[in-house]
Length: 339
Ligand code: TYM
Image: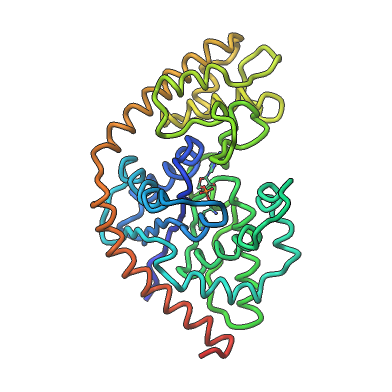
């Protein structure tokens, strides 16, 4: 009997999500889930143990529920194949992480750019920040997930997951399914190319929740007016023509990419609409309007989703996740003669 495949993704819960999270990961996952949930398991979880690598407070509980409400507001249809769960409610994640720590190499972890970014300039860095890609590998490998729809910034962690699984399978027991390579993930996500929404003020960088400057990121909770202002003040360039060229015109290209995604239109279509145009202000105006409409619509839907709805899904989802994860963990424990 062939096994039902699993499509899996996670979104951290530290704060409100940005438009980058939404367009880069959430929307593609909702589309895939709605396409495949008759024939595949759709695992959508909140990696709350990842959240505590940075400072958290009493808001965390509410912030764990919020990303899941966002999926529902973005149009995710629920059925018995769609599973919501919290990482810390499935203890096998931390248990497998420890086992994989004894397989992963320091050299590989030292190369992770997110670790370099997150630790840069800090006097003291906690071990969780260094080790979190191994926990991410456990998140994926416990469920034999082949497809893991994520934004481009997570591809290095996917590659690491593949390397850890390969090493484990070769040296201990052949028990893990390798997630597909990033190139195949992008093809599966049907997004044309990997999505990386840029920081509005410094488009060399990705739009990030943790950015200190409020104008650099659009939050899903921004009022349409706030979002418009941020787009109108986005950094552009002095080239003087509107074209898609992430290397030489990252700011303008970012606006074109955002406009395509909020309108659910092919990027090429948006780019050709602007071919030959030179007025950056007109482009900003159009993107600002489109993002404002998009946010209004999304926020209206979000207001209709209750915490209770999510809590009910978590109860069922965590029962399922514990069953699958414990079975895979047992295989890994046996491979190490722990059982
Ligand atoms: P996190 O919470 O930082 O981001 C959640 C998702 O949003 C995507 N993303 C972006 N996409 C495009 N442009 C951007 N500017 C942008 N910013 C964020 C991320 O790529 C991600 O898909 N380690 C993960 C969470 C995680 C996970 C997992 C994901 C933990 N375990 C297992 C998948 C599978 C993270 O910190 O994502």
